[in-house]
Image 1 (spheres, rainbow, N blue to C red):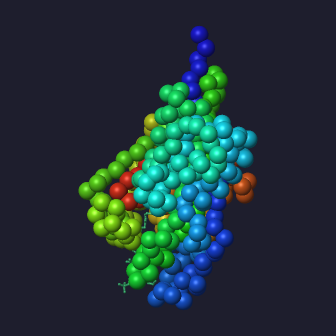
Image 2 (cartoon, helix red, strand yellow):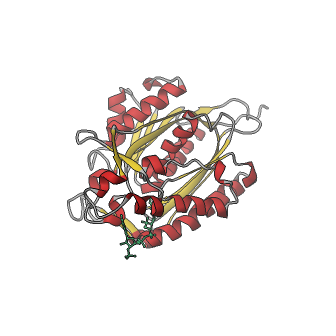
Image 3 (cartoon, rainbow, N blue to C red):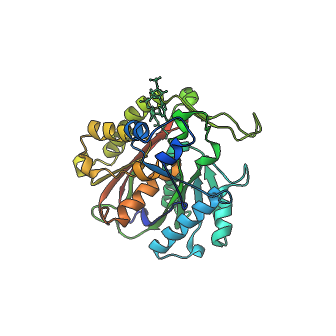
Length: 327
Ligand code: UT7
């Protein structure tokens, strides 16, 4: 009997950033802040803001197009679209159905996932389950955010931290005999603790205020939890996959703060040369940040096929998670 299992592999990666680059100095013209403060406290140098007429589905569609191109697939090959976002085009229907429509995907399943900065990892895990149970062959997993639409420009502690963008992966099922070493998604881990929900949220919603709301954050608490839980999440997936942390080629973390990333790398004994950092360029793009960083690392030639990657994130919820992937 042949030893066949369905593996879900990343067959394509793509991203999209809007045209408008906003530097820290640009922000300092409208907010009481400075390039020095933003860089030293967060590592952010600039961010991209979407145009008024661009919704999250537009950013998502461009990222998905690029991921499909890299995978060598056509929209009609896709049977599942999941968009992780906290900034949907509309309260309903999902942003995913607009992506489906814009890409002319004729059939399949489409829905959004709301898990804030951990959203991409939640979506990846769900797509992985659809694939390994044989329900789906090719899935688009997208993180897309237009966070500029709900920043409070009176709150300098949050408005300088976020940016817009989208990243996407195509996850594909292969039922060939198990590769050696196994490839694709090797282990995932997700968690959330609603008792910590008030540390990071938007103070609006359709069933409460009837407004979108603005970002509210207890930065110190989120920081402390991020370092602890992101590190734990990486320990979890390496244990689940029975892989040593020394085998990790690239740590691709959520990009919220360079000090969080460095503290996690230290706790995990990962050399900084193995960490993909894009926060200086993109700022915090919530669910888009991991696929954006992944795409950046692939396009500049650092991340190569066959290498072992670990993704990890924490954000509003608080919700967090990780994934260990052989690319
Ligand atoms: O993606 C979701 C996850 N999000 C995160 O992981 C974010 C986690 N938290 C953080 O990254 C950090 O807590 C921040 C970057 C948000 C803040 O850094 P901090 O070292 O915790 O600074 P702080 O909030 O304690 O503020 C220090 C000082 C304060 O002044 P005083 O009270 O010491 O006089 C703030 O008023 O910095 C001041 N400050 C600013 N100054 C200039 C706060 N924001 C600004 C600003 N420009 N934009």
